[in-house]
Image (cartoon, rainbow, N blue to C red):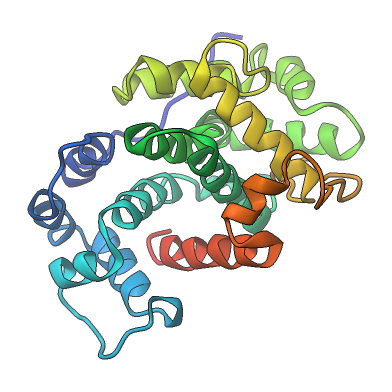
Length: 266
């Protein structure tokens, strides 16, 4: 159909912050220098540091101190989530359940992080989990009226990708890969976003495919399609992954913590 799908370019500070998220050698000082000049990122980090689950002794109102309290990895993940969240305002307008959409992204991010091996792979896995539906965000942002038609088709029983293909002639996996390339996210992330429904192109794309499958089994939909039932087997082959996240209850608590931190930047 010739549409051009796009998201607004990231503001300079957020582009620099996102670059630091996917760098293994980023320091506390590097992150603090970009967080403290961006109100949305500052608010997200302070909210996380002062939350009950961070066990604050005294409230923190300085970004660098907040970063130290919650740690490097959590900070990177909140930054990634806050940036993606800041671009997703149109999803509610087209009829997507925003709470469930974000539960799905964060669940996939946590599951990919837990399943990956090695520190760098875990960080990239978390970021890929958060980013895998960026194409859906771009489609809804660029053409909200048409994406609302997609939502209606899905609600009537059509597969989401088939509905996107019918309305747009393409799918959110293809559009997402284009956005990831435009944002300079690197080949592995682009590949994982483009292949997250199949997991056949590489380790990272398999991690996201598997995380989506496990998220679905736990009854966590994507805000557009809804699992028919919880099929997770607490004694099955996936149980070790969920136990590493604190069991089903601990997993839900982690999802809620990240949702609370990211919400302030939306």
